[in-house]
Length: 73
Image (tube, rainbow, N blue to C red; front, side, top):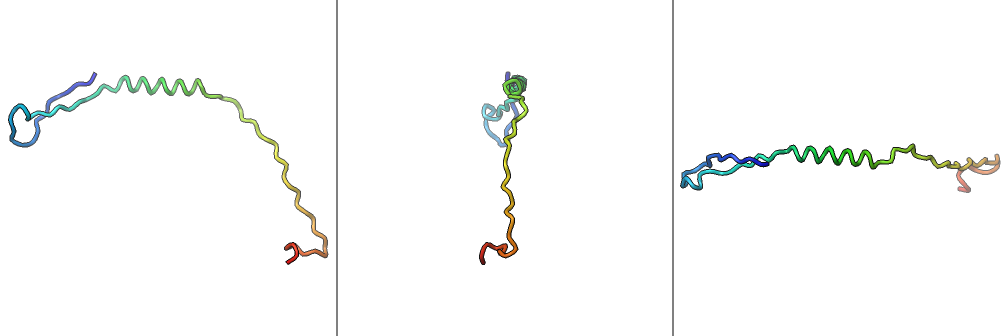
């Protein structure tokens, strides 16, 4: 639950308006929810080694001695 504590406000007003309420929420349920979310995502994750696709790299062309390397420039 949240607790509230009255604190005096600056200024000279009536005693009824002289106090503000500051809420201090209890963070225990929020921490529990965080742990539940972490547990859920760890259990729902797929811990499988990823498969690798085999790639074939292009072969570098061999040039004749008479041709230029720039492709006819």
